Image (cartoon, rainbow, N blue to C red):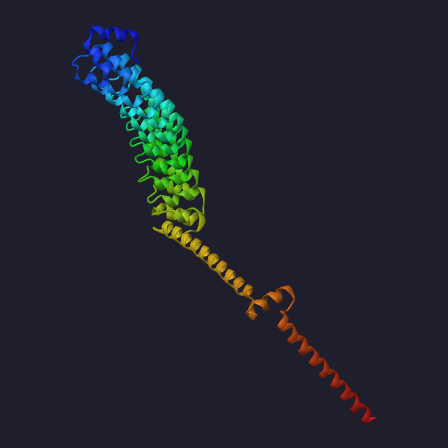
Length: 358
């Protein structure tokens, strides 16, 4: 309803009379005054789309109970933006250049709003990542501080970082050494840290330096099987540390061959390491295959015995338990009875012959 002041103004202002009669008449007014704008928007909030430069008070009136009207405001003030975000955080995506305060409020209410921001401020990035590190994937160029915060909470988030800094790589490997394989181009210091934490990570290092190789074999001499061309120093460390690891040395030098023969009586070949590893792999797979086949055979035999029609399954089961199946038990008892009768007849006949001889 129009206010008393608006009715009084309508007596002397034709623009006011027009908008009080029909709010859409403001579209025909070139430069409506702030009072005329307010009168039109109070009657119909959607007419904000006809006002080129609405005042902040008019903007607030238009979006207070209709946040979607933010679409029709070219440059909403920060106060207007905050009012809209308070009701609908997802509308931050419709604001051309939201202020940091507006971005922060939207992400605090709904962290997934970070996907709607093109260039979120660092504080906004941190807020989203601290709520859930997986939102790091929505940030195009996260700062190092944001990367560290995400990786510290969840090391696997490093996969969402195109070029993690050295400090971030160290943080991920420190939290979980298995993450090393997901780092695309790790620094030398990161390689060393990853191998020191878990020697098997040497398999994910291409052309490892001697320092990294030494760290791997000192962690476990058997890691020599993952090194294609170990240096002579690395070979010597393995040879002195573990006799069982010596056959896995790939491309041993002549000196190492001589020492292996003197120390353990081992004859090392150039490809001994790879061949032995392949043999062990095939042996292991063979054992697993045999166990699997044996399991299938037992399962098949058990099913055959359960079907109950075959004599073999029942005979085996009866022999194990010491009891014969019913139809076999009768036959055996019959044979025993017949044998008993024959034995008795033979004894009687022998008695008669003995009596006659007397």
